[in-house]
Amino acid sequence: MADVFSGKIRFWSQIDEEAPELKIVLINRATNQNIRQGFQKSLGIKRILRTARVEGPERHAINAVTGELEAITFVSMAPALRAKVDGISVNLVFVDRIEPEYQTVLDGRYPLQRPIVFISKPKPSDLALVFEQFVLSPAGQKLVKKVKYYPLSHE
Image 1 (cartoon, rainbow, N blue to C red):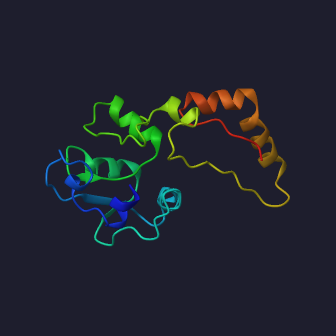
Image 2 (cartoon, helix red, strand yellow):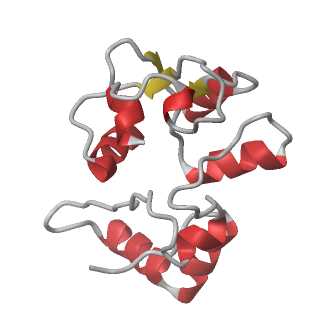
């Protein structure tokens, strides 16, 4: 994946000899999208190919690859799975033969993951502390799972 987004691999046939000789169309994410930094860091990509088209919000990135066999992008798991459920014509990329799905992220098998981090002032307000306690409580973690985010750890 890193070789694709860095531009080392430019054709689908370089990934799979049975794939068509189609040029890979990269859809990058805007620099202000946190997912971009996490994606690059997880894969050790210093720079995504400059000619890649840039999209902002998740839905725009998903729309950019919908029905486009040669296009590839990266989005968060929940919107990607939601798109599949909604019947949007996208394929999710297996990594090391692990399917990207809710359970494979929860159990740690799917390797592309990024945490959600809560940051506060050194002396957070009472309201911020109450929110943190709720999120880390069993009820908060149940809600986190219900909306298809992943359980938090307190560090």
